[in-house]
Length: 302
Length: 317
Image (cartoon, rainbow over all chains, first blue to last red; front, side, top):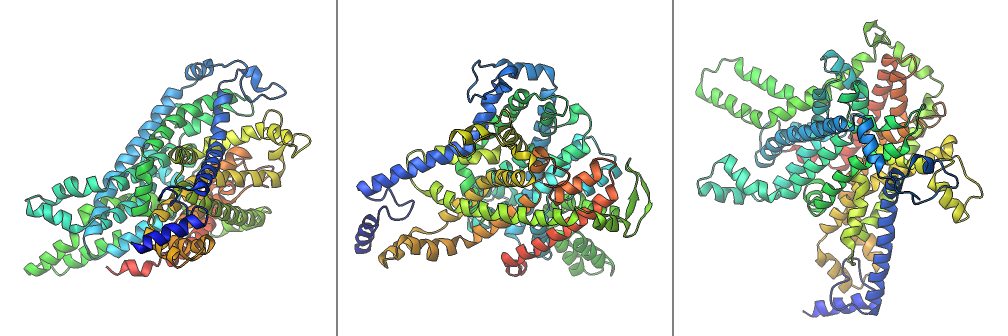
């Protein structure tokens, strides 16, 4: 008790104490000033992170003639929402979006279905080759498609899989798999075995114990793995650029830069499409933000 | 790993499962297979096969249409080392990786503290900081390219407005300025993940450690350097190493903003590798040689990583 009092006094003596301890006790005037400063800095930081996307949105809403007007204006004089409609009609955006959705969705599903049992088994069992498996996962986590793109390209040529969605799905699933295994392994390891043993006593089998007891408790780890994979696949660029050639089999990342080439520069279309691609993902991210910190805490950071 | 299982399987099969215990041992060795087998297959087929394919291609003669004409021995490597730009590209890659990761980690340490502090609207700030992570790196890079446009970009307008420059600057046409701006974009897109990893690390530090420090009368700076930073070491390591890999491979930023140009004055090893294979007359063999050199660098980083995370403890199962 006495330590608590002491610590509170110490905290108040120096303005604010450490970050995160602001709310303990009633904030004095120094504490209030600190909160105000923190909030101010916070909003400034938020603005800096949002600014490029704000500019993206504002440009997407400008008519063609305003894009090249001089002097440049920050806000559109005439808000032109038709850019979104135009680009949707003029280019196979919907097809590209379907490609992105299929590739990212199926790759995430595969990565998760493959990573889950592997992570669970290695977390719960000691077996010969366990160390080797975890080492394989740790090492391949360091390989990015970009570094191996020549090899991937040659492999897909050999397998006759160039210009197919299957190739994109496999590449995205496999390259994100190690991170999924790693984060889930960390998460499963942190959940006490006793909880499952209790389920066994109640007559549950291994799979039931996993799906009823362990998985619900691992939700932050699962969400982190899913999001990491989905975002990685949704935003993958180099492999898609290299192995797809038909416009209707290209994901958005490859199709979008096509609006600005040496022959034409439709920046407003480029940004209209970018917004269509970015906004759903950002909303998704914002929704799971609280799980994300928890997932990284248990799985990634240990 | 795949090989280990197969080798064990073959080994167990060889003496013919005469006794029950041998059969049981064989069964036990196979037990992990349904659980980890698919993962091993996927990694071997899609991640490790390209490694093999890349090394093989680097000693082949490949036509511009992609057909194999024959072997070339070390010819592709000789061509690569004869490239006049190679040394500059490799040095630039080091500057790019070290610069971007250092700046990212330092800013992220501050951002992690900010996101961990309590103030009204903290959640909104966290959401804002997450946005560049969710947004595509490519699209973010294209946005910055537009903002840096000589005629219509807002960067020139803002900098002129606050009086930092007198007249518009064509940022991306000057290799040095272009590189600095692209490094900033690389930092910008790396900050969210790194800050969140550090935030996650901060939340694993128990409150009573700080209580104890306060009782001992440690000041804020001292608490930070003697308690917070040392306890953050694991998350910092993870964040830094994952960053090194991502930044090493951050192809879209350079490819979208300058295309490595003018010439190859803003190329890093990855864009250089891509250009060798897929632009101009295209030499896949020489590009594969560049990829192998690149890969050797990554392997060195992997070894450093394994040492840093203290792998040896984990392998003892």
